[in-house]
Amino acid sequence: MLDMIKKIIKIAFKFVGVALLGFLGYIVWAINPWNMPAIFKRNYPEAFERMPLKLISPFISLY
Image (cartoon, rainbow, N blue to C red; front, side, top):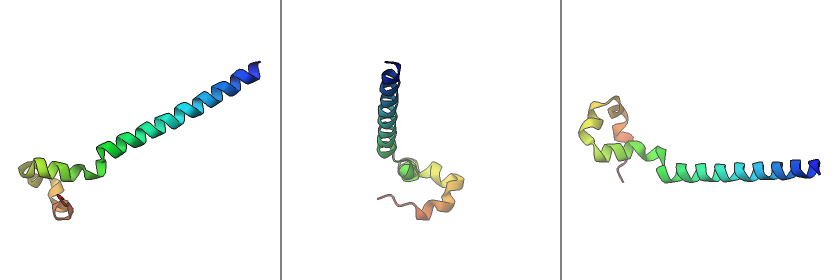
């Protein structure tokens, strides 16, 4: 009986782990942190040009 409970708990932890990884993957896909400089440059061009990020400004596409 105790072995069965342990197996059920292990399966539940695996399911929760997969669900959390899926949720985290969805959040990263929705936010797209690799596109944040382009969003910032598009919304705040004056502030962007005053920051040290202006060195990479030519490499950031707005489209």
